[in-house]
Image (tube, rainbow, N blue to C red; front, top):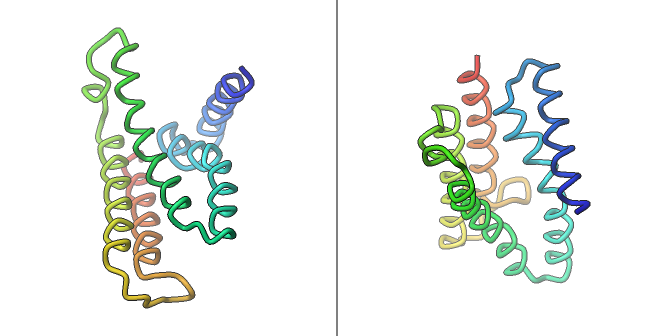
Length: 144
């Protein structure tokens, strides 16, 4: 029950932030609320890496992606109107494509391990950071 109430409060706070800043509900939801809901995962991923259980950390990341995609099925089941994805606009399509590309970058990074690094991170992580920043800028411009 606490998680449900906190989730509702987080959504309300995100809506208030979007109205106060003018950033738009989509961008605030994608970045700020997404970041806030991912914080518990950061602790479990950090703990897994400290235990040198890298497969557990990767499973956490990819498992969360799969679970989130599965929530679309639940949304369609409980939404009374047309299918949820039919109501998605350009912002949602680009945000989904950004998530797909970022996931693909890390999957390719898992398959192609040459142990080359840049600033102590793999080139896949560097590419993901650059793609993420570019995607956020593009999404910001779409909302303008």
